[in-house]
Length: 572
Image (cartoon, rainbow, N blue to C red):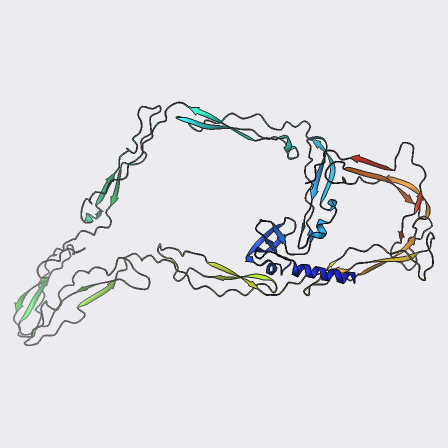
């Protein structure tokens, strides 16, 4: 009945403790360090603590556990609190969890332990001598500071020998006038380009340039200080290519005439043609095409129709853009005419065969920069927990399109989260209570066995506490332990003195009047007791404290000893 009452109290504590409205919730709480990890977000404290493994942080920045009250591990022992002579060292632990009253009501020795120690730093020198002062932070014109350091040469256990700062500063003054170092004025405007277009000469590209200049006058370097001021670093002139200019036009020039060809017809009046090409050089960058015909003819007598013949191709026109956009082509065209000669009309000659226009892609241009753009957010992931709170995640990719050819990357976050709640409290597993005291040793049927060498039995019990929300029952199935025993409470027995027990810890663990103690044990003589009774697989125990007669101690010896603990710190 008592265990059921304790369970109900714990369930009420877990689900009904009044809390603040909103806290920062974390998916992990470290019992040893008291730190929260893996933040979920800001939620109501009741919702956060549906999972006893979670932790939360309020506005004071202190992390708290959502679980049952539990002690952290003991810290490491501190260093001895004195450098030389008798002192103490301490270790501590903390209690974390909901409703810490049972921890807070525990004895101070459950939270803090103290034991004596001896300082081993009696001859430690502590700080080394001060090193030399650093140069003054200013070399001219006023007040600065300089510093010096010293090193602590003590081993870790003697660091207290190095009290005080490791660094000192003091003011220092520089009397001489500071030099004024030169500073550049702003750049003046750019000059005009040295030409209006980009030319070629004997295979070399000649790109026009422009210049701008600045002066070392903002301020000018001082000349009457020691040392004088530095001149301005860098160049007084800047030269820049006018690469944005168009190429200079190159006019076309005719090549030599070819020999006359045979007569163009086998009958009628025909022509004998001679050709020349506008290719010495060909016109480029808007240069003029060759003036005059590309063919010359002479009449040959042959009364036949005159068929049309193409003129030469014109130069390629300008590209329809300056760079190639994604998924589209940039093109340019050229044309020719059926006029060299035009087809005769009487008798009718044939028109020219083929296309009068040609188009090609401008594949020599660079690709246009493509700025990145986010794709759609993915659906939020399913809630990753089956109880309490979890964190759902949605992601997006910078692939609609991806940045290419120097384009800008996507701005913003690639991941977003939202808190999900199952509206279910997580299971709270049961934990065993402490074992009860052993019951009185009895013989079946109630026969009196006190002070007799007749064995009986006794038992002790424990309970599985705090189980809630379908949590696991306690591991192991022993609610009761039973063992064979002899009832020796207040029985007169002979005994012998044993060695000293180990020294206890200092009690109390802080403040004045702390002592430690030890004692000599008067051990009873159990001769005549059957320690392994029939039908028992375990060694028999003894119930109660007998009245043992060990005789007098040797002269000069004591049964109990105590020592004061020296230099124990005051309680916090």
